[in-house]
Length: 132
Image (cartoon, rainbow, N blue to C red; front, side, top):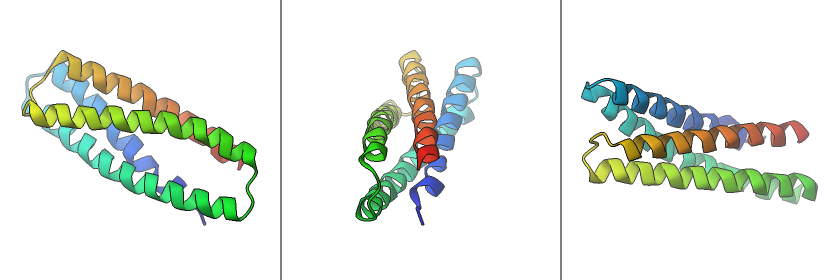
């Protein structure tokens, strides 16, 4: 049984919700939106660590069972986008931590870039899952 497809939805949902709260923080002055975005991004990073770990465990198990190289090659493209998205959200979290979670336009842009990357990752992941 593959575990990665079961846990991968958590960082995706948390990061997209974090971006939504960043947009709300941009439009409203209440600090609850910034704090919520901070915690959603941080929890998404924890979820990503779990998801990446189980992704490698599942991949190694699938390779032992003889999954075709086409699936593995297709998954490499997907995983590269996922790693870049994770790096963007890591930068996002560090930025928030260093500026004491004050709002910045650059932070909103970084959050939007991360949301686009994670949406692409989710789409590519669904395609990989379909061919499996």
